[in-house]
Length: 218
Ligand code: MD3
Ligand code: FE
Image 1 (cartoon, helix red, strand yellow):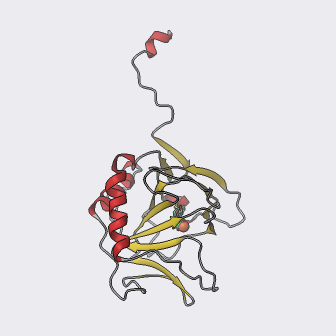
Image 2 (cartoon, helix red, strand yellow):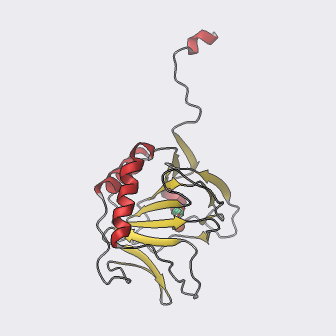
Image 3 (cartoon, protein in one colour):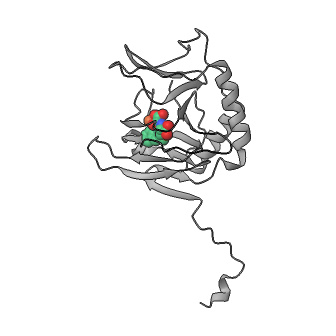
């Protein structure tokens, strides 16, 4: 094989899709081309259902600020964790999921082998400097056959991706603006978290990171 056989071939610096673990696929930059309408959608949702710091059943205020859109929203209070059709702060249903959210989530799921993903819940997480999310499992959803699709916007974060047991060694996965990860199959119930955020400034989101997680909760 002579070097000129490679001329004209586009060899990406990183593959577009990286398997992280069985069932977990990282789509680097998948949301970049739709960053503006996604962030406009976030603003529209948050105008109707403002970010808030939920309290854990144990009484601790979460450092992540959260809101939701879609038919169901994830909430936590002294009585436990659950999905609820009503925003407890407003007493009204959560805002509808913007079409661009549904389209992106379905496209990412399809690219990872999950055809027909129609999420009914989108949790919006906002991280500022120092915000962290300790190791946990997502197991409040009605079935685990569908993946969770996550979209990272704004400041970078270091994601912790462990195994089925809390004590399993976690790998550190840097996630940057526009990255999308599809967590299905065996990875769906793995422990995961986010390391404390560093300070920074992003041209589109300012001093924060926004993470969207799309779920089939009902
Ligand atoms: C792996 N959010 O909202 S997204 C969460 O960056 C949550 O805001 C983090 O964990 C964030 O529950 C991580 C990536 C993610 C989401 C759900 C998963 C990874 C997952 C479920 C199972 C395995
Ligand atoms: Fe989670």
